[in-house]
Length: 159
Image (cartoon, rainbow, N blue to C red; front, side):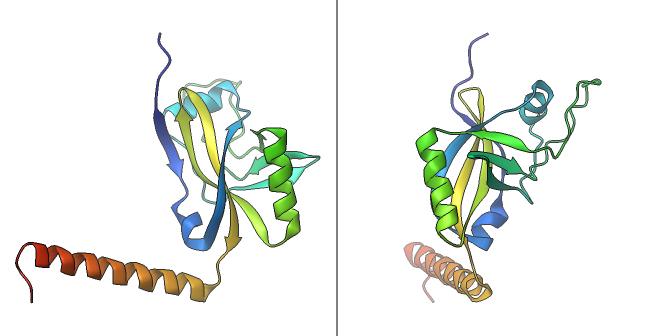
């Protein structure tokens, strides 16, 4: 059977972009068991409360929910177990340094299959204050209104 090509998104964390300002992103592999991969291929995962953390010089993903594989037997996995992230040593050291430096966290943005391999996109992020969130919403609404007006003008329906 030929290896699948391209990128298939399994789960994305929309709330992360609302709650955090994204500074940098990294692609990481995950150490998974067989039933976890099968459950991901079925399109079942949740990143709602997930975050990455350093322990003993390694990065681990906490709180990601991959439900048990329905056809799995006693070999099934724990749905919210801690999973090791697979990155190059230079990237791990850079991420650990930046999080220790000040006020930054590592948040998963999405889980996907890239050429058949399960990957997670990790973002180095800084938490937004509530006024920053309101400012972003106001800007998005203004941009939407501008686009709507430009669309009307293009169709010859100006007010």
